[in-house]
Length: 238
Ligand code: ADP
Ligand code: MG
Image 1 (tube, helix red, strand yellow):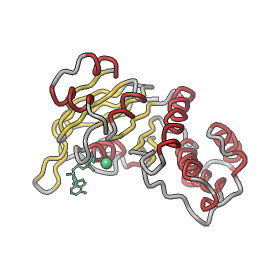
Image 2 (cartoon, rainbow, N blue to C red):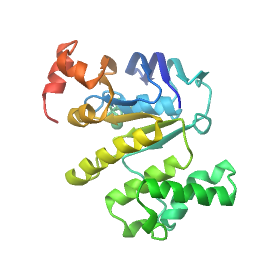
Image 3 (cartoon, rainbow, N blue to C red):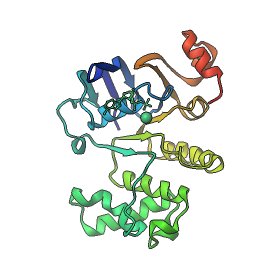
Image 4 (cartoon, rainbow, N blue to C red):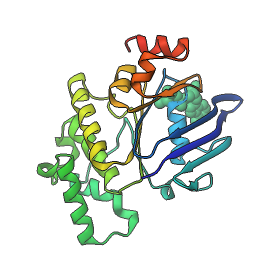
């Protein structure tokens, strides 16, 4: 587990500053939701935390380690995206196990991890199937399991449910909240949907045009929005 600290983090693409001087602490073990309109810099912020993008200036800390110069593989973070790419020729079990390939985990231990985690995400019956025979929700669970098997300190999820239909999305929201409770790991979850944000997060970061507008619990944001952007954004359905 680990808290994440962003200090004066800025990102410029060509001459456009898309993320502006972010200062925020993401609490250890929290389910933190980063929410804001499309194009406001959510994915860029996540990618900088994961090390897939380098900040133009500022510092990023994960736990007590400043990670500015650490490659993604050394940050102990697992990412789940909207377009979760599973390997079509591999079975569910092989897809999950693939998360361990570069980790030099012994075969017996790999087997134990895969069975433990497939149990948690409800995939035990599907381990020998290929992804094409799974539903969207099951595929999303495989993507989660592949991330979980690495036992990361932090989970980063970038709009992971946006390809699912409304019913499945609701179910997966609940499952993700339960998963977070069970693991106790820090989750950083990105969505542009304020209803999703307010129903899932225990801490919300509201971003607009690369600027943090408010950081607080859903209750406090709802009852006491600190600016008109927040008030209007939270008050409007997606
Ligand atoms: P969000 O995830 O909130 O929709 P992004 O972080 O993807 O927003 O993008 C923020 C802004 O940065 C957008 O204007 C986007 O076009 C721009 N952007 C993102 N990635 C790149 C890139 N690799 N090169 C240039 N511009 C980019
Ligand atoms: Mg995005």
